[in-house]
Image (cartoon, rainbow, N blue to C red; front, side):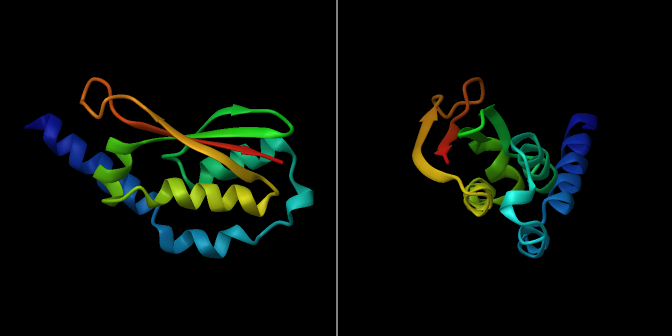
Length: 117
């Protein structure tokens, strides 16, 4: 029972933190040329904590989202696609979207977005 209550509390807290209604206003706060690569990563992760930067260089970034976490908190994978749109704002273009995993509890499906400048 304690685990369930902790899980519900954690999910509620995350939902409040990443409520997508707050994201649109925050996308246009800084021009793309003002941020360096590490600053883009920090800004992305502060706005969308469920999306991780798996890899980053000056010209490439790989975003990672886990389906089970995204769906359990938001009921959709929309934050993953919003993160892609966010990175487009900073000059990245989507090259490919790929998945890994089997969709099971031990091996959940993970989405990867490969983007370049």
